[in-house]
Image (cartoon, rainbow, N blue to C red; front, side, top):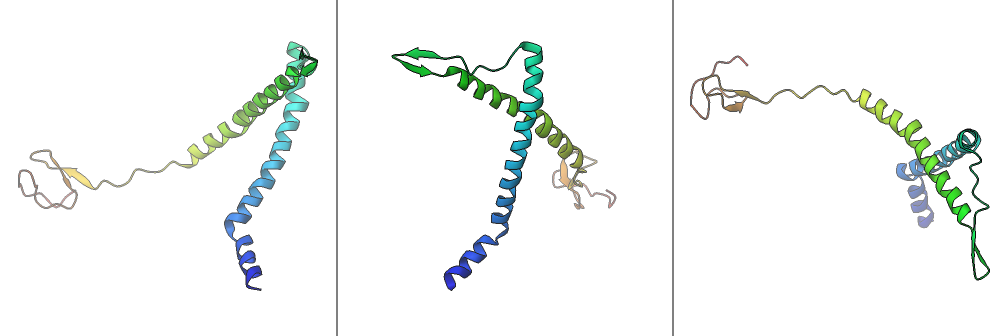
Length: 138
C-alpha cells in the first residue's frame, strides 16, 4: 500500500502533470505545423519552382539502392518545419514577451556628493571621501 501512495504522489506532482500537458500540446502542435507545411507551403513551393518531390532520386552500388531523394525530402521537410515554427511561433512569442516585460528601472541606491562628485550611499549624511556634511535632500 505504501508503494502505491508514493506512486500517486509522484504522478500528481506539478512537474509530471505539466510535462504531460506539454507533450500532448507539442504533439498536437507538431501535427498542425506538419499539415501547414504539407498542405500549404510545399504546394506553394511546387507552384513556384516545380515539383518538390525528390523521392525517386537514388544511386546504386553493388545492387544496393541508396535513396538519397528520401533523405533530401526529409531534410527539406525539417528545414521548412523549422522555418515555419521560427517565423510563425518563436518570433511572435519573443515580441510578445518583450512587450510585456517593460520593467521600470530600480530606484537608485547611491548619489553623487555635491562637493567632490564621488558616489556615496543615498542615506549618507557625510561624504566618506571629502567628509563634507550633506543636506538631507536627495
